Length: 241
Image 1 (cartoon, one colour):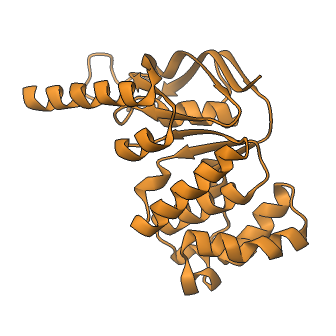
Image 2 (cartoon, rainbow, N blue to C red; image 1 turned 120 degrees about the horizontal axis):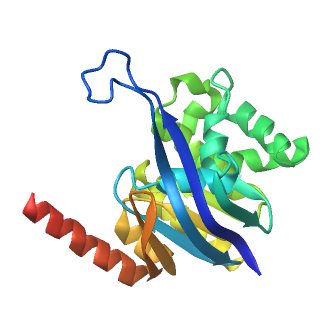
């Protein structure tokens, strides 16, 4: 049974124009499809990578799978609970410390207070926060907040994990620990959908990959093949322009 089943999904945005703009359409608003006609399936105990340039639709697709965006076309069917790092990070309370945010978010996600307090030290260590764990999140860098969100999500007892550019933050030690953590979760039967520009890490972690461009799937298959073709195409475009 597929843990994640996406069928013909499209997400449409209304982009507002600027009154008086020097444009042939007079600055009127227009529609933009963040993703369109996307179909994918992911089984239990597997990692699917999403690759593509900025604006390709990777984050939009992850948000549609997470339920943050409701598809305008198609359907998303999930077997299991989702732990989306992007929504955990966004919902963190700026005035609370890491400890308090872990307890608050963890209990909202199904932990008991006892579980939250027991697991909090491991989450903080995984995130590499050090003494900043006692400070309010408003003084954290974007990278520190992202590391906290990733670490917390990987400790939740959810079957599906969604990651957006998580290895773009943190040092090499954090990336190493994060990869080891993901590999352990997958061995335990978790399913992961992750995007990123670190193609080497995606190649190491993922069995399969999907390439998006302009919101549409342009390639799908074994991760090493999809990523190799993407690298070649990016190199060709760079040499041409």
